[in-house]
Every structure is written in structure tokens, then in C-alpha cells.
Image (cartoon, rainbow, N blue to C red; front, side, top):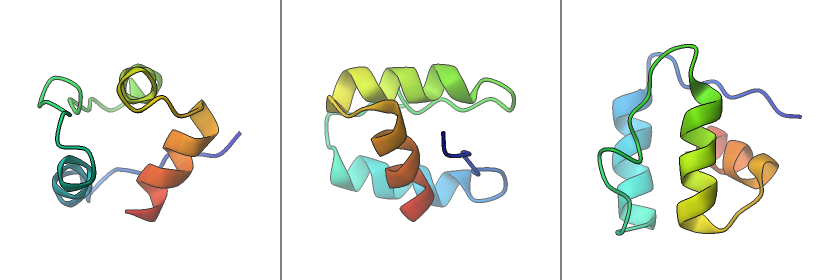
Length: 61
């Protein structure tokens, strides 16, 4: 399972994610340190991607 590394660049990643998926809301993209699994779960539900696909996608932004 890939590691999710968002710390420090979350605002940039969030903007790019909204551009890629216009239906993502601020609530979908709410990130709290230590709650990465919840974020990935919300994005899985919205995008229809697997956990690994979501993690790889976020790490590539």
C-alpha cells in the first residue's frame, strides 16, 4: 500500500484536485493530519477509484 504524503503542500494539491474533479467539495477535501484514511475514503467514493489509485493520484499532483 502506498504512503500518502500531503504535509506542507496540501493547498496546492487541493486546488489541482478540484480542477481535475469539479464535483469535489471543500468537505470532500478536508485534510487533517492523522486522518488520511478518511480523506482517501471520501475521494474513493467521489471518484470511483481504488484506494491505491487515489493515493497514487494525490501523490502525483
